[in-house]
Amino acid sequence: IHGLHELFQQAFDMSPYSYFLQMRLREAKRTLLQHPNKALREVAEQTGFNDVSHFVATFRKKEGITPGKYRELHLTVDQKERLQEKAE
Image (cartoon, rainbow, N blue to C red):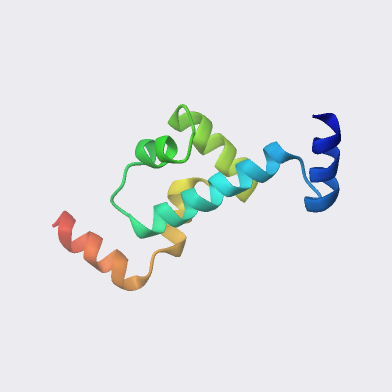
């Protein structure tokens, strides 16, 4: 198993765990934008995080901002307008 870990590290320049975490965060970012009404708790669960606080902390550490802020910054103007209309 150690040899496999070494091969992975050489091929991808990161550990298997880091790669897997990167894939989970990529899916979380996609979900945050495609489903703007979905609660962070649901996004966390869908992407393999046991609780929302761990998800938010990991996201912030890797991306530099919280998942909520990421969503806010990356939603299109049209998406924001539709969300606001639903809230009214």
